[in-house]
Length: 388
Image 1 (cartoon, helix red, strand yellow):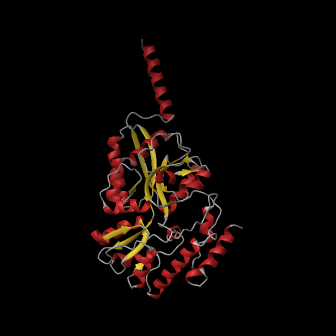
Image 2 (cartoon, one colour; image 1 turned 45 degrees about the horizontal axis):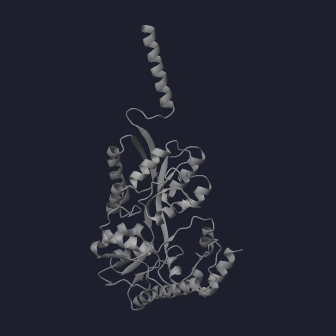
Image 3 (cartoon, helix red, strand yellow; image 1 turned 90 degrees about the horizontal axis):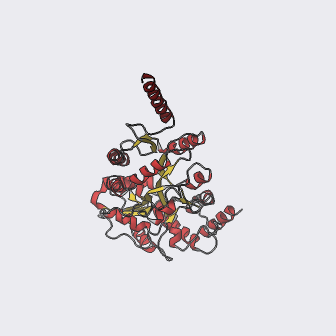
């Protein structure tokens, strides 16, 4: 009897050790999911996320979420280095700036099958922002794009067209236009211009849309320069929040600073439409990505779906200003609704290698703005260089 009992106890002990070594859920902690983020310490985003994660302890009792904050400037390199070494977190959240490259390099897991049938509550633009070549690589969390922010005390009605914006500035109203190849990209679409064709060949010099937009931007730049107005989002922060500049073009990542300073005086509108239709700013998507090394992808997916679910998204929206990817979220903030409306014409950031041809050839815009090169000549030379 004693021998049988000892044998049974030995088997139980051995089984327990083996289960622990294989990573099976412990009785007290459940499955563990390691999650990285880059929200700044004490920021509205970190505070809101902490609140959501605290609630997750109740709502996801079988999953322990181990959180690590990594500085934004380090998170991509740290993640890539760790994954290449066979390690890294189960999941992390970041913009889709380099999603295409990371997916092609095998650094992010293809979750097309894992998430099949589970994204019915998410907007198509946000899903497109998490996809590369028809495959899904992330769960969308929030949307970002450049819009027109204005002070309601200084501008009654924001300019709806490029002509109205130019007239406003010519009339002496200080507007901080962010001149730069990312911030002003949306004006190309307003003039009917395309940088790429359907095969991702650079065609900016075919037709006059892109060069017309660049000529228009140069007109605005010269007005800004003559009046010593800010010409980028960083220099425009103080004038706009202090009530000197009436408006600024920038992404919604700056909304927290603007709203803190201006309160109910803050308004938002799409970038002005041009002769060919609405402006088409780059639309970025933040989302949750999964480590191909992870053995907990299903649990990580459950966490990501929770963090992008209705309740969590409402917290991130109301307390951190995130524009939710989840369409079931009840939007009551007019600024968030204004952003959602403005994003409808966004140009989903392409996850193709050819996008690098835009950054490397169309960003030296001082050739036009400062050196006086004709816009059409600049666009022609940039396009030829891109297609070499």
